[in-house]
Length: 491
Image (cartoon, rainbow, N blue to C red; front, side, top):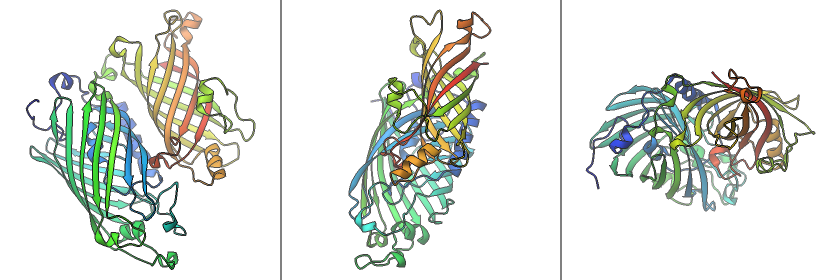
């Protein structure tokens, strides 16, 4: 086991020298813009209810190395606080970015007002991971108005020292749900030895009456013979956790954690609350783009511009059928279309000497709903892998691509809203985003060196709720697919 090292500027123990030599330095302007868009997106979204336990910050902060970006997924097993709600699991997609001025940590995004060696001050927007079950409402909550997940505006102060990190946060619901406020005080300690990282954490949350009454109270109009009206009022919740990661390779990290939240005694006395102690278990993995050379900072690093146009598919024409060529037709009943522009910058090129590149994209999509509902726009932020190692690529360069990220719509597209309405469930504006494509070099086809880095191809714009198993994405069982053609050029 290696000797303990002092914390870096984000409070985490440094990795080995070989890893640190490859960490991404300062963030380029394009990624600052991308993260700023992510912050704006978080500020206007309203997502579906999720957990009632501790914050994800102690887990996501383990991956937050300056200048890095990452994608991953965590499966969370929990005990619900509500009577007869039982236990459940949840899939939490991790979209991670740590820039000089902006950051994105799964359900939190914001700007760094102060980012010194010892102190950091953030202004952030966070989805509150709290609320009634979205998929299977227990009988104990029947007849009650839904308690939705809130959107909090917060201010955070962090003080890093060799003996640990102290953190204080103030949050207020700006989404118009609970209209409540909360103050959090926390302590974490970071330990690293070789590929192992551990982070124990302790926090207390001082919650006002509006917040507790919204999530754990029973209104007079909701009272029944077996459920009395109740208002728990202000109180204090306490959370204890142990989170860790293991560097499986330079890029891949395994994640795990356990936590327990102790609800205030007045909350426990609510007729809709069954347990005071809420345990949780986290298991997942993440791909860290932070351990690489800054490809975008190299001389001649290209910027990709992509224009596309696509049409919606029928409801039964899902992504697997499209990728296996079982369904390649567009909708004939209530057809809708999209047009979009996407801008990308390389993150990695020729990974490990393979014909494999990674490009980060930000895209803006316009929906033409053909009078079925009001038109809208959509923001897509995603990382995309391109493979070009085909036997014929030396003659006609061919790229097979797959993008993964997050999509925020101004309003749920018509094909999503109508499908969810048919199943009696609400749609979600924020969903997971996939972008599979295949293209060829137009210059190679025409014998023009000038157009060598211009590609024409086809793809699928896919929004998904991950089969209804992710409350962060609104428990949407379904999504939308648009078959599109495009032209992309590297300038």
